Image 1 (cartoon, helix red, strand yellow):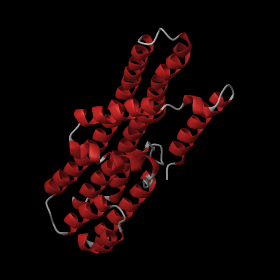
Image 2 (cartoon, rainbow, N blue to C red):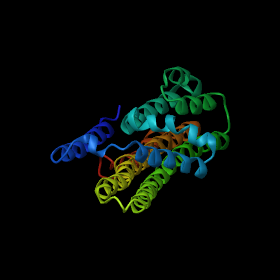
Image 3 (tube, rainbow, N blue to C red):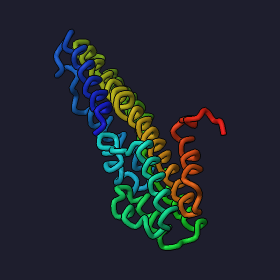
Length: 254
């Protein structure tokens, strides 16, 4: 579970609520028509901007912001080096047990193709295709949240304009001008909160998640192709250490 996302949302709402309570009641900032225009309008805009299947899949994408377990890159590298050593000593068939023990479907599938004798180029093509699918999925989710972040404030402004028009239509009642103006401004308030506390930060978090996941997939890609080609484990280690940003233990001396 991503504690940072939860802390950010809870603390952000807490700061806003606390600031409101210092000068008034929370109920003063609740207006049902404003909620309807901002939330309903934002959702409607999303349906216009994206295909139905993408919008319906947004719930699944959102869950990745709160529940996301990513294996450490160092552990992946260590595992691949171990598999490489085993394959070099006992042949490719000796790594069948590693396929059963693999918790990452991407790694398990690649190793299975390796054991089955699939050509290196074909393994690479399949693995690359899977990486592209992950990029597209995460990219679509981030794009939807970015769009929501731009639509919400716009509908907040639309709600404000609606409220102002209604207020101007009742200028003959001076006592209603103040309360009507307050209600008109609340929609802008709602749109700003949705965009800056939820949608835009969530889009950024998904981009980070995608980068982390693709980085791990690239490590596995390099590792499995190296194992398939029978490269020396030391060479594999040098290749994969690039992803960790590490330097050779001997300082690069040969």
